[in-house]
Image 1: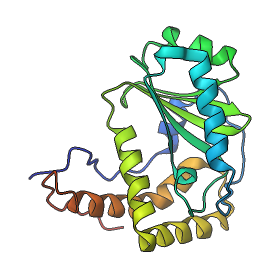
Image 2: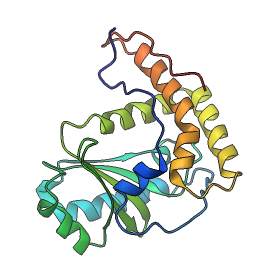
Image 3: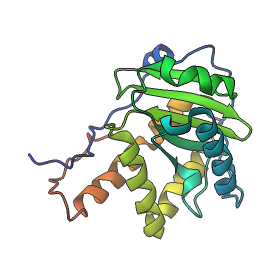
Image 4: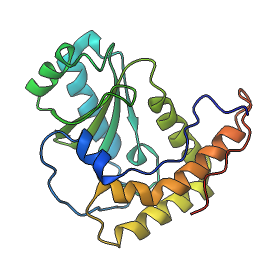
Length: 207
């Protein structure tokens, strides 16, 4: 079966997995989803500038991703950023300088494309650190681009996020799992529409 190079199987996050990759003690907080804010692009630029200042040429690329990067999309008021460095698994090569600049390591996930997350607090941001060959940053960009170009899909995703925010969820994994089916289905439509790659449908398991 031919699958798109950015395809991933449908999977949910377990509490044990979250606990295993988390660095430090997680503070409980309620998931909040807000209307799009005009200040989000400027907030991203502040984070990107801090990253570039801390790492210089070690910043191979930096991109605004996630819901706050999509014009008109409701989102958690947290800026998501993808940072590409030469080897995200080599923490001594980049983490001490980010820590000195106010970033805090919160997730270490070496088995998943050497993924790390560092938090920033002014503005509130999650910086996802990956190596150059990682697939996930590419998925982030195609998903955001698709939503920006397909208003019906954007509205469907925004409606789900708003409904989930009314449920008083206090765990990111629960929120992520509740979005997973729609996110997977949207990716399937993205892959099926890609003229550069053949993709045979890969339906997710029935809920």
